[in-house]
Length: 476
Image 1 (cartoon, rainbow, N blue to C red):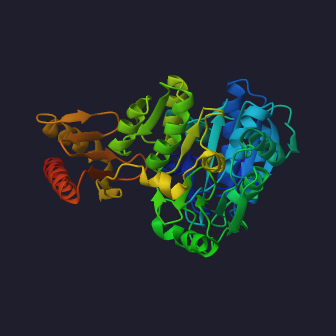
Image 2: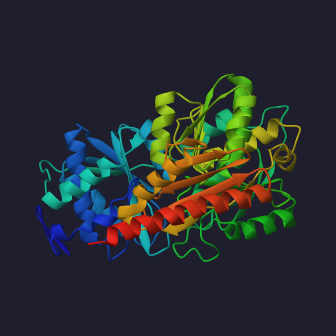
């Protein structure tokens, strides 16, 4: 592909793949969906978007994937051709890009990252102002590309700047071990993503004893996939903790906006459990504070926040949606099962796994209990992982509506995001995936027997609804 003035020579813009424009970001397979030509045009489209919002300059960061340096060149080329000035913050975790929105003179930003997706994929998280865009705003970028509705003028500039040291120093100053605190031994597993570019240095600056695992960024992810929601990916972390006698294990996903936490006993603490631990701590200082969890979170989260004197809020799945709700409600804390945690208490309110790890170490340094002992104070519930049922795209919402109608006759039904049915001893969730032709199901109950009962009842209703609606749509 070659750039000739304002004309991109190569595949027609009208061949732009629509499926890469997701609910929360732009994501696809490198060289198939995401060609360098596509990325240059994306840069031009973003230039048009930013110019329309009177944004003069933006920050651009990238992850460690093999395709990211080339994509950086194309994005920057498209932005500067559109008259936008660029601050190139280099190879960084996604939270550093978010940090740039608050610490550079910019009106937006682009993070080039495939997050925890396979190595042959990549993507783009787009920020306008101090927030990530989502939904219709992402589709508008595609419209600009298809219509080649670009802007030109005096070329913008590009300059390199590093924020890593400023980020470490700012957080360290607030969260370092106090005179009466204790040093925590922690293993930090970056999974060969970007987290250990700044994570271990920050935790050592705070005064803690850090053992690094798979710190070197490597686009092949040779040891394990960087997704801390999959227990198998935490196996090496658990083994290293046992070997070193560490109290806490911290794992990051590929771009470090999601955290996984493990105790010395090998117990994995999921997003909703971490929200309880952090929520209790915050509520001791901020009685009545609002804390947000999404519809897949345990009922125990909402009950424990209430018990601790807080105001629990249940909201939709999706990091951009949660971030917007956090701002709207002026909440202190929010999070998802997937490990996205958002601290507005003493921080900026975006999802930052490195900062979440720092808050965990700070909390432990002040606590007389170790992490394993704190984990034992959490309510015991029995739940399933996400169950994904294939469902044609055009039937997803109809199935959810049918299930909601059936259960609402006898049970309390929450319709915040899909349908969450509250049973006497647990709950069941059915929601349409935002990104795939599947229905996402999850169940929780007070005992294994109740869990089996709830799961069977809800799945039967879903299968019946899917069969009836499929039959109805197949009739001539």
